[in-house]
Structures are given as structure tokens and as C-alpha cells.
Image (cartoon, rainbow, N blue to C red; front, side):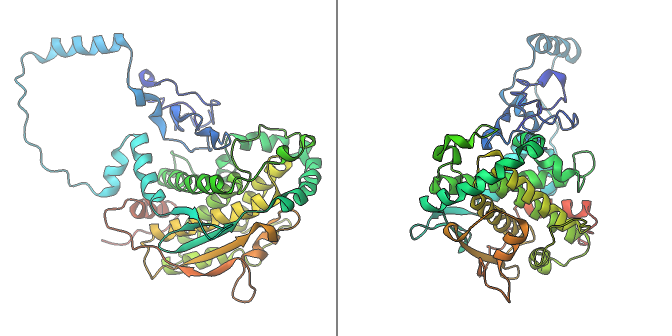
Length: 411
């Protein structure tokens, strides 16, 4: 997930990271998207995760500037300082708030602090067979992986999708190394204009990826190429379970977080934000033109997910349930950022992979979510623990929301 380390001090180009794929070489400003975290890429070589970046000086992580610079610094100090017995003035305690102290951290420690808080919200465990469950205080989403007969049936859909490869190949290849530039093309964010949003997206993706990979490990569904060499994927098949799709999980998670920021910036009250986000998905329009920015985010997420079936590495059900996993965990992540507790309930979901037939489309997926009038995957509500005042995601959320027009609460 690279793009250098922090081009900050040419000296600490660090190991110049693994330079990854020179990643998004694009934003030389954030030069770090994951420095040597480089192939954070084996999320299926999600590589740069776009700007999954400013994790920056993973490059300097091992330390070690040039021997010449170290010698010169020591020589300069000796020449300028004279004798010093080690005494220093007593400093006043640092009264900085949590967000200020967070932003003072180097890129990797900051990312680690945020990821730890996000990941700690969820556990993933086997449920009553064959279900697997993501939990907060109670079940959040329960997924049943498709059986062998179902994935064999879905091979016909994978074969049909192969006909789109010539049209989709540039997207498929670009999204192998990261899809955030596609979202930034719709809702601009970057370290130069919305840095808090970038850090929030990174924290969310680190959280969701942890949940997703644990779920994949429990499900262990064979890839299309394992069933037939005639699939001939146009990209390397990732080395983990097909179900649920990581690209679908992360793309729908990103769409959900950006949708929530967009809505909160437009003045949606915190207590209504989760349901307001879901309301955008019922009903949904897939045909152009669509001007609603939230719907466009989800249309993009669905296309990113579908591209993985076109590429030959996923079944449609992988995308459908990956999208649900991304939606559900990110709504819970947002609820935590808003303070959590019983005043901010989030939906509980349950979906069976054997019930999904045919291809994956956004309209079909939205229809499966369910609402008050139509049953679907939605299966009640649950809550998260109330956020503690020492946790850092809530103040980071408030700072990010302000970047989209939401006024921070008065002290």
C-alpha cells in the first residue's frame, strides 16, 4: 500500500519502502501511503489502497539515515554546544487535547492507534454451523457461506461476466492496486484539503480489512479458477477465500463512510444518520443520469465489486455479502464515532449465501437489504458500548465532519 515513505526528509526515504507499485505516485504530498507497508498490498494486492496512505514513514520505521549525515550532525553539535552538564528547565505538563496529540504522532504510530480502536469494536467467530458472526456487544452480521453446489451454479455467471473483460480491463488493473482515487474523483479528499477525512478512511479500512480477513479465514470458499482452468483470470488470484469479497467489503465500506460524512455535513442529526444513510438505498436507481452524490458512491462501489467477477476471481455472491459486510461494519464504526450507546442503534443482519442467485447488481442488492415493509437481510437492531472519553475516533470523526461542512459543537 505504498507510494514511498514520507518524502519528507529525503534522508529518510527509509527503505524507500517497497515503493510498492510506486503506488499513487500521484500525491507526492502524501508520499506515504504506507511506505514500506508497501504490499499491505496482499489484501489482494490492494496495494496503495489509494491513499491508504500517510501511514507514511513506514519507510523510516527501521531508522537509519546516512552515516555521513549522522557524523555531520554529531560534529556540528560538538562544535556549537560547548560543555553541557545535562540540566534542562522543567516543562509544564502538556495540556493538548486528544486530537492534537494524535496528529502529532508519526504516521505509523497514529495509524496503529486508530486501527487498534476500530478493530477492538468487533469480534469475528464461528456461529452455529455453518454461520459465522461479526459481533459487537451482540451479533451485528451473520453470514452463511455458499455450499459447493451454489458456487458451481454461479460459475455460469462468472463465465458470462468474462465477456466484459475488454471493456473493464483498465479499471480491473487499476483497482487491483487501490480504488480510493475512484472515490476521490467523486468526493475530493486528500492530505492537502481534507486530511482528517483521509485518516478516518484509513482507520475504517484497517478495521474493516481485519474483520473481512477473519471472516474469509472462517469461510474458506474456493476461487473460480480452483473449479475450472477455463476461467483464466486476467489478474493474479489472491491467496485467500473468495467469500466474502474483500474489494466489495472495502468499496461498500468506503461508500458508506463517505455517504455518512456527506449527510452529516448537510446537517443530518447524529441520531438519524445511520437510518438516513440506509434510506438512500431504498429504492435505488442504476440507470444514468444520477445526480445524488450518495447513490453515485454506491454505484461506484458496486462497479468495483463487479469488476472482480469480470476479472475471474469472484462469484456474484462474494460481492453481495462482501458489500453487506462493508455496510454493516461501517455503520457500526460510524455509530462508535458518534458516541455509541443505546441512543445510536445500528441494524443487525443475517444472510445466507445459498439464497443468492444470478449476477450482482446494486438494485438487486438494495432489494435484499430489507426495510420496514419488505423482509430481507435486516434482522433487528443492536448497539455498541458507549464511547469512552479517552477514545480518539470520535474527535477524529468530528474533525472530518467539519471538513464537509458540519460545524463542531460549541465547547
